[in-house]
Length: 525
Image 1 (cartoon, rainbow, N blue to C red):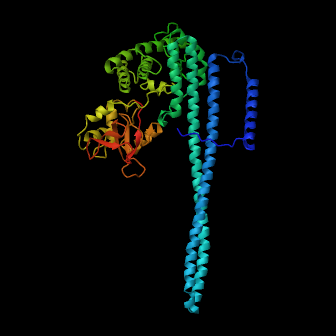
Image 2 (image 1 turned 120 degrees about the horizontal axis):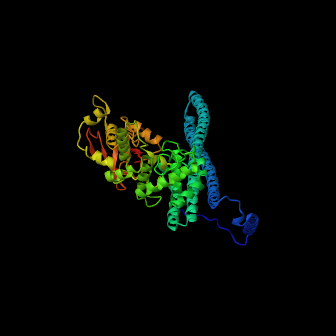
Image 3 (image 1 turned 45 degrees about the vertical axis):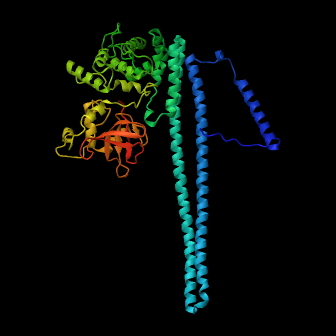
């Protein structure tokens, strides 16, 4: 961290005495203002401890946001002045050089003037007039160019600063929302008396704020729940406490957001669940929102227990529990037995099996876990951890020459450039195309555009994880022209498996900052 610069002051001078007086005045005013606004916490008009905690944290973070914005504006103004001064100095130097050069030419001509005849003198005079005219035009041209360059640079700097300011504001807003959600969960846990839960949620609060301030671009995927869902918070807290899962209030709200957005008489869509004892087991049969929440919380508790979830940050088991909430508890035992837990591929496979078994076109939501976790403040806790399933499939194809197996699978009847097709084929073998985790693409740039549109893109210099999709730009033309799969990265070297590398599947290595690396697609496995 850079040292904080302090301004030196001379003790005893009028300036330092004035400054001390001003400081005393500010302190006196601050004390008076604080005293006027101070009042006992018990007398404040808050509906609950939850809203009080949220208001306090929201106010603190809002004040920090305003200070950050002011600092960004001051930085922009300072940058603008620096650019203006730089180009003014450059303009002066340019004029001086032109003046010195022209004077040298002029004096050189005058030295030989005495030895020329009248005709030569007239010729020299005409050349002098032309030189003077040229100098005037050159001066004007230089001034115009300098002015245009200055204006262009200033505009560019202002735009760049504005983009950074907006980006900081967006991240700060998300941090506020994540911090408020964490604070509400903490207050609820304290109210329930669960001290282990308090420790867990406190970690979540700290992590949530830090994640949105310092996380990379692709991690900013949290979407707050709707006002309708927030309105049910007291009821959710009531039943979460009753069934012993107070620390999962935010997860329950995320489920409700995915199921109904907080609308309808059955906001948890629990009518078809096993805990519904009052209404028919058909979609939207429950006509009492509170009863729907009662049944939904019991269902979530059952899934969390069967998935052996340890805490609100145990994302592998939370994903398993969430997919079980959507499919029914039968999925959880099936997935554990088949693969040891939740995977995108087995979620898709289970859906296909059940749809075929019952003669339906589809069964459940294959991406239910990911869909819920976008509304969960800690849903991106282990985002970007990578996946080795696709690397294992890719490694089994090493040595393949010509790529016929891959481009014929894609639907081509003759050889084409097949690096992107190879990545698509590997993804398809794992079920990632069917689940929407990785696109099916034959043009390299199409893959880049897909990941960028999803907000799952990282630039060169990022430390990739196994299963990330690496894109290359061999000619530095600004567009990707080759793609492969990251096998691993040791911090300085990226190890890849690529198709159509010399017309075959092979392993390659690159420096993390290699100029040939265009960027990475980071699938949400």
